[in-house]
Length: 137
Image 1 (cartoon, rainbow, N blue to C red):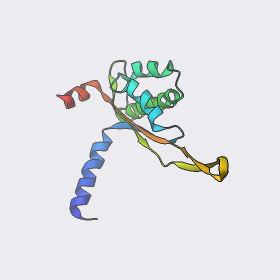
Image 2 (cartoon, rainbow, N blue to C red):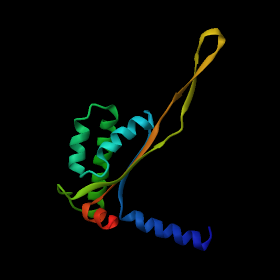
Image 3 (cartoon, one colour):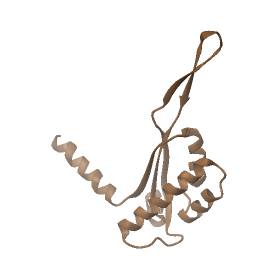
């Protein structure tokens, strides 16, 4: 590894030490379905987002709720204190495609229809509301 690349990697590592995030990988549902739920909570205060996810009737909401609780716990561990209501918000949440499982289903007249079993990865970053407002300004 070259010096310039190592220096930029060190800078990125230092920035990640201050960020509380959680990742959920290889969720067996389509990214489109997960993005519908992620859009509901993007930018919300964390305890309000937990309420939204708890009372949503989508299957993806339960998985996102567990992920959000994990991100809050990660923030509390890094800052060595409990998160208060109105302090944290979801600064970033994004859903990426995971590798697809491709299967064949028998079809009429000797053909085969392809079945694509999609999966997704979700990354959720939690930050204080003041920091998010400072970054936007």
